[in-house]
Length: 179
Image (cartoon, helix red, strand yellow):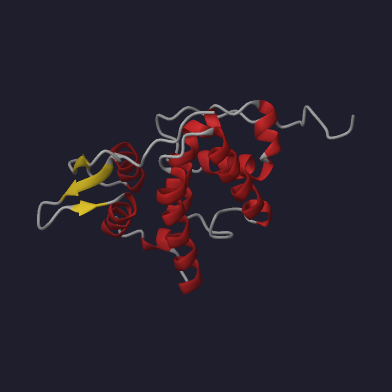
């Protein structure tokens, strides 16, 4: 399994394009952990993946991606925080296995991270997990069936994938638990 990359400007550039914003924002990174920085034209720079992503969503006037109810907004914030604190920088197989196991359990009865509504949390988690899911074996994808279902659903959402590779998921289970 691949190491999870730290959140970077490339995710924000994909988000910008998805939101239909004009290119032209200047992104940089700060510190060894490669924390994204956005230099705004009218004010101080913005720092951090979720801060910048939230700013871009509001700039695009697509606040529904931040959640529509107080509870949904809290769930979106929870998953954005999870994206930065748990997904970014975890490189060993055990960390990745735990992340996928937890996410698989959470998604058991949900279409998206905020239940039935597609949000910014789905977008950034998709971008953050793409390289990890891309390196899973067929058996690992089957083991994390709910993650695979969610990921496949999100990657087919209009405008999400862009230049990222399409991850193939088997429609028929190749293996069963029966021996």
